[in-house]
Length: 78
Image (cartoon, rainbow, N blue to C red; front, side):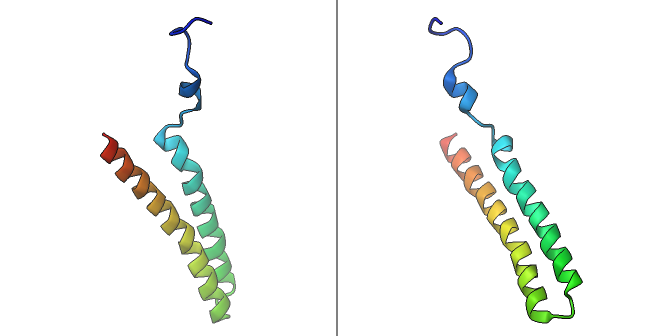
């Protein structure tokens, strides 16, 4: 293959912003639904319910933080 023809190897490996963030958001959404559903099922046990509520919120905070980190780095690079 000659230079300059066809897709570059780096171009094949490069992820777009949406493709990179989608698994994080999907995991956070599914985890939140499962944890909050479990917290509702065990609503009579305060300690366990509160733990599940916190565990449901944590991945959402991580996903939003990752989104903001990538967004800030993307803006700084131009």
